[in-house]
Figure 1: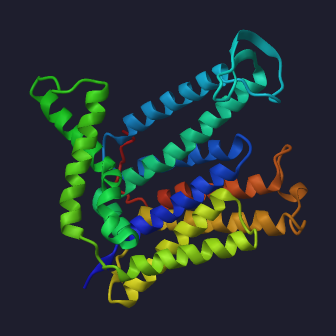
Figure 2 (figure 1 turned 135 degrees about the vertical axis):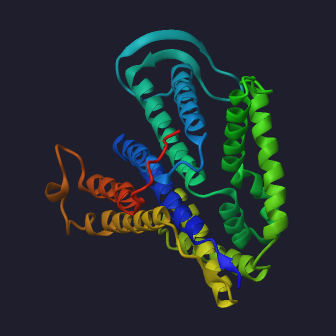
Figure 3 (figure 1 turned 180 degrees about the horizontal axis):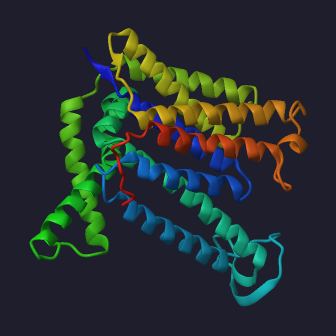
Length: 336
């Protein structure tokens, strides 16, 4: 009997809700709590998939630096703050404004965007740390069907990085240097490994469970989008989450009705599922109950922090809390 990648589906549900939470947030608190939740959960995922952490940290530092540089170079009106320095101004004919007065508000906005990007990268890093390429390719095949080969290399980047780390460790164990150096050759090697790994997995997984589930999932996603857009129920990021969630849910149900069974999820996947449910509950609570003053910001707020932020931040910490409880006693973990 065919099985469904339950762990990948639960982690995917948490990732969608977490990224959605970051995208609709307006301050520093929510992205910072997402990063904190990722840091607390990371050691609970064990030693099996080493090498992803170092790259994640490097990508986060690079992203923050790029956003800060863009905040200095690209001029934004209405950011406020004190003028720090004035750069030569340039306005290309294609649009945009560069240089001019650089203010503290402009830098703060750039850093905020960088922190939000780091939060999204943290979520993606957790996905590759928690679930191997096989799980993600199977989950992709469930929704994408024949198009799984296009997306599969992205699903195998974690496996490729782990393979790089194993080869690097083995080569250094023999007193040699890796055959590639830092720079584009590393990224090229990473992508080549991901492509080769994805081809192997797609050859095994195929387009299981066929075309029926992808067709139903596409129909459900389209219907959910049309309904939400017609009734103005959601913003842009929320529309994307609704479409993706509807597609995956319907595809999983159809596959299950056609004979596939759900695998028993790992402990960290149970934590991810609990975190997703908590975030969905927080989103509904913030949008409806807090908005109608059923629960006031005075009751839930702390030192000027809005009540909905407190609720959402608490929901984000469900993942590390449950992951710590579900973590095997013999597992020491490895944050690398």
